[in-house]
Image (cartoon, rainbow, N blue to C red):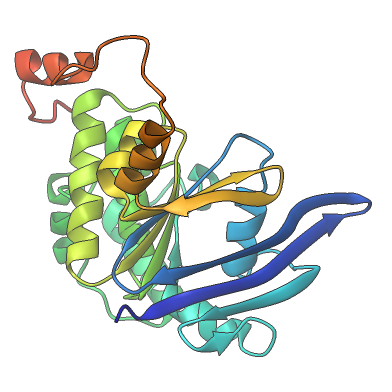
Length: 253
């Protein structure tokens, strides 16, 4: 029996007369990678920001690891990690100093070297955030979500703009974090990424969940309707060719 760590029931969010989230309900299981997918404006960002305690809801119930959002938002904040945007980093501090700063804010004792090793950035310990490559910035951003030793982390389009090597390296890091027991909630516009990473996905459109299942099951359901791709599906894609020819190793400045 899978253990539910997030339960969302009939969640609604209105902005004036506009209904951004129209009664969404779903559960996230402990230790899974759960994808929330949808086009821009579908309501997925509002949904996540409500769960993250960053935005108020209009109605509905949100329970995170037994804590009710209405009653215990501060307890929820203690057990989640949210990916910071670029503006969240002080430009004058190096990576070690940034980790120590955030650890102090969380009142946590963190081994900065150990955390940077985990995300393959120990050689950049004395570098400033602005000096990192795109892939390095994303790995450091994920590292910051782990500082308070969260049970759940939220990653918002973590591989946007990355080259294939950096992208796949980040996939491996996300899978490693899940394998160590952390539940991961991810948004992405890359369907191949969701297919590789996610145990289950919820597809959101116009403020409602239109499908929720494992990627394999959703694909099988579509095929069962008689759907066929116009082009023959090959055993590899162009990204596989690129990785095979140029190597899997990260090439970073």
